[in-house]
Length: 119
Image (cartoon, rainbow, N blue to C red):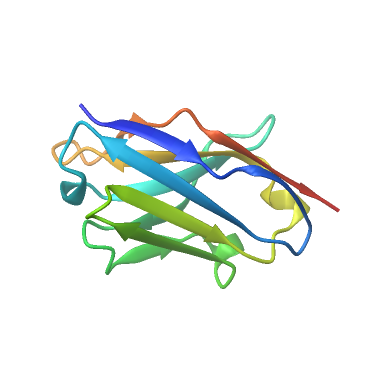
């Protein structure tokens, strides 16, 4: 079992930056692809970014390309999401998740951290 705890959310003005962290425990962190999802009120939870086991292969949804950067430190069992040039439409609860190595589905989830971007 993998436990995930996010931190770093908050309130920021449009154009500002935040850095989210997700600390993992209870599993072999370096075996998991890690993703950051977000869910805005009334909307579905969507994948925003992902990083493979060593962080060398990444995915970004189109709306965050050039503004968000995902990275991971396997020695610290932590994945990060650096968010720059934030927009009001980035407002959501952000969740980190670990993809199960057998099912290849995101099976382990953190509790989420709120990001609010004011205009």
